[in-house]
Length: 123
Image 1 (cartoon, rainbow, N blue to C red):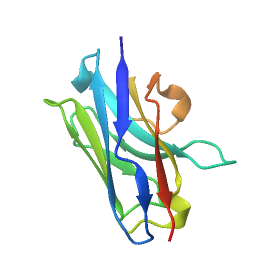
Image 2 (image 1 turned 90 degrees about the vertical axis):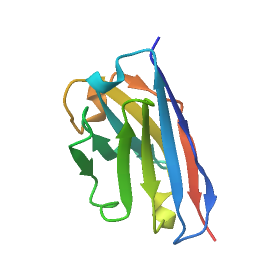
Image 3 (image 1 turned 45 degrees about the vertical axis):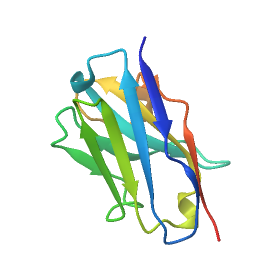
Image 4 (image 1 turned 45 degrees about the horizontal axis):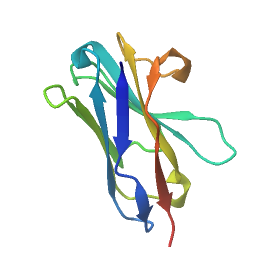
């Protein structure tokens, strides 16, 4: 069974940092692209960052470029999202997802999803 467990969310002040982690099990981890997505209240789920199977290729949404960093450890089977300089507009539920094969940005092409972790940026 494919399982993705997202953790690390919480309440942080604007300008602060959080590190999200996605722990995977039940599949050949290094054969899958991993993406982080987020969904704010009343909005559609959007891509935040994607990392290729080897970790050598990454993508960032324009809204987080320069502030967020995605990384993966294929031995530990984890993907982390380091989020710095957080803004109130980063408030959302963050989900990790995986797909077999190369990196894509469309959420519809990700087969498995974790349960999400809530990030709230507020003073």
